[in-house]
Image (cartoon, rainbow, N blue to C red):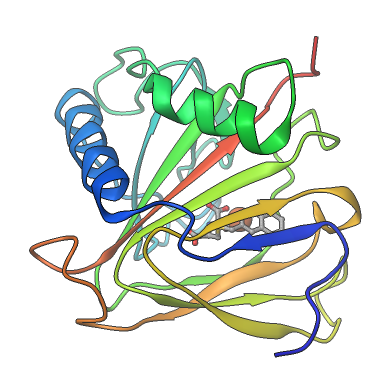
Length: 205
Ligand code: MD3
Ligand code: FE
């Protein structure tokens, strides 16, 4: 595998099986309070194949009318997002070394057929803070390019328990998930993959 772009740290199998199981239980509690929704592309209303929810003070949502944004409440129930589990805040603190908390944890649920097209994450007002990504369940083929859509991309596999820290000059790089590898993990009994991304949304204090 070639070298990762500057600012990207991949920590393979950072979480052991016990920690992964506990996190999945905590995410199940989040989903019980904030059900998975089907995000829609701005303007077209085209549904994404990934289902989503959030925890923390802010959550990322998207629909046909209002497009990509962060908001404090669930788009369908109108209820505030559940709090971020303290072990996620502890992971953020330990791995980023930052004194301030993330504001959003986006929970992406991929069925074995789901994928996510190449995109940039630029709906945050704070790009100096890193994004912390946690993979759980089936593995995926992740792709990352540069700051322009036409830039060369490289692909690598993300397995259950892997963490990726995205910071520095890579924060605005294009990236996506090309495919899920069915039956590559037995963490989730019904298959699929969960990805958690912890983010700072408003300017850091
Ligand atoms: C590289 N999620 O939620 S996580 C997303 O696996 C998203 O669900 C993917 O892209 C997933 O927006 C990838 C790793 C990741 C997250 C944010 C990034 C990589 C990134 C931001 C900039 C560059
Ligand atoms: Fe992204």
